[in-house]
Length: 136
Image (cartoon, rainbow, N blue to C red; front, side, top):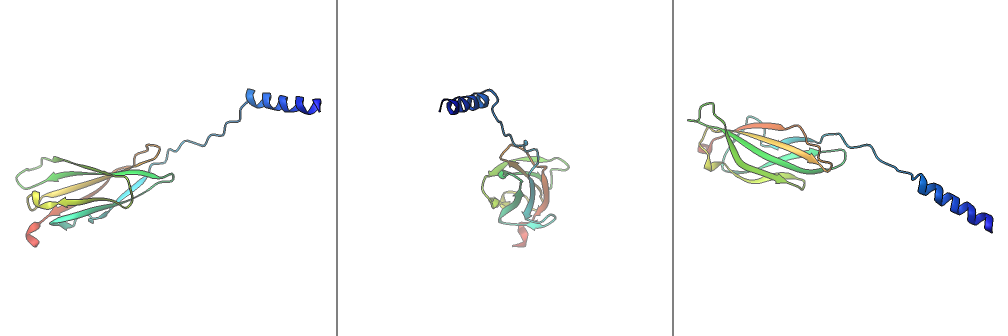
């Protein structure tokens, strides 16, 4: 009985001195993202929902939507939008993008970026569309 006790004590001491650490490899894979609506080079009007698909080997934490505008009368200058929207739940979408607040023939560059649960950031995906509310 004394021998068994010493064996158990030795095993516990050994584990305490040399703990087993199982670490997984760090996640360095970027998530992927693409705009699913509206398609590139399309004409948009009224109020629309912009959608994106995102994927990752661990899990997507969020998708951010960002907009840039080039319109008539602005020349080559780009007006960066104050519209930044982040969606944390699939399907990833920006609901209620109102085109009526912009001039017809305004080009809208829609950028989306995905972030995963370990803070890796995707490369941005771009879609360029044009506003034309005169079609309604």
